[in-house]
Image (tube, rainbow, N blue to C red; front, top):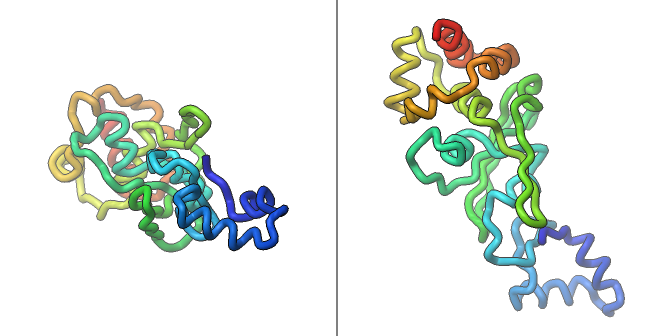
Amino acid sequence: MIKTTAMILDELKNYASPASKLSRMAQNGEYIKIVRGLYETDPSTPGYLLAGSIYGPSYLSFEFALAYHGLIPEAVYTFTSATYDKKKKKKFETPFGTFTYRDIPRDAYPLGVEIVKEGDYSYWIASPEKALCDALYTKAPVANHKELLILLFDDMRIDEQEFDKLNYNDIIILAESYHSTNVQKLRQLMRRI
């Protein structure tokens, strides 16, 4: 279970020095420090369950969500998340894995995101269509549809069968919120198909 320092210190308020008690509990492995001010009680908790708590507001997207939805064949070992108005990329190395965060346009941020409950945890993750738009937003602009296809299927290694399962209408709607050549070219491609 995720807990903040304030929550733990409140639970330990009957001790003479709650901060010292917390320090000892962390050394004994009762609490695992994730980042400053944030702890986890279970060392086997998968990192993706913690991503939204480490830095936010954020949701899992980019390569992690593409792999989660089966759009790329590779296993992804970094928990990649989308944010907005942060102006810079963030990276956190923790006992639970590496977490990266990068901006997308504010207008696009709330669209195409799903909440998933898993046990006592819940997390936000991009839909397959949204993860693809987010990923394309971060790539260098392509000049035409031929270059877009090379980017999608050769460079990003998007699975063509999974690509064909995407909801084209969702991509067309999502694309309106991105000011990105690549996402606009994807929308044009979807309209053709």
